[in-house]
Length: 133
Length: 133
DNA sequence: CAGCATCCATGACGATACTG
DNA sequence: CAGTATCGTCATGGATGCTG
Image (cartoon, rainbow over all chains, first blue to last red):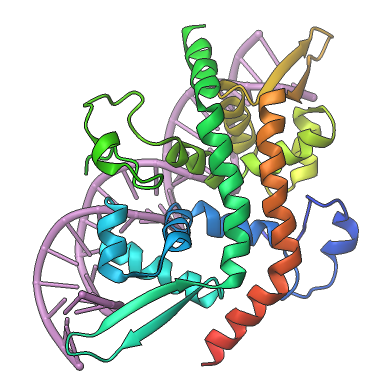
């Protein structure tokens, strides 16, 4: 399956052509991949509160494997959403800090989270009704 | 791994206990699973604009398999985010409509999407810088 | 402490074929 | 047209063990 089209904001025909693999797919897809990876949002949210070290994050998130934590942090760093600060103490200390860019995304995320917490009862009710049916 | 904790909003100790598998995990996790499934957001966004039939959605989204479309629609319906309307014509016509509940989530999603479209250049630049490094 | 590499299970997803 | 069923593939992510 070859992708490269952006069906969302509504200019499929326009956006599609331009064999340009670079700016090709719509940003939405990429963003969703980032959000969808299940840990980014958690990490970003925690870092929104304070800078944290690797192990601190691991303890806070609880359920995340060391591998996924590293991996996700690396992605976030690559995307410019968090920065990595190494203090060359004896056992090294590495602290992660959210960037202004990341903080902007975080604002949007919080809205989602707020919605979730507010509406989850309704969703749960809908699910129950659907399953009962 | 047993989950059942909500490390986000900050009461791990409190939320954790309650062997209650039911209301146990924090709503955030569930929401993220929904968002993360890669098609929900697309579908929801399209339905935000107008009611659409199965095939119309399939054509619009382009890249989605028939299976995933059905499956995702079923999930959204179960969650009370969209409703399904069958018109008993000869080849049946099934139309999907977003619910007020779904629309509420959509608002939050749009914020994310807007952020993505506004900031994607910065993100791309960050990625390029990281990779060059 | 931070973090990479390896192995492996599970599940998400696509392709295909078939029903009402 | 709308939808289910089945199967194969591949990515996601956990467990474990090793390095600076």
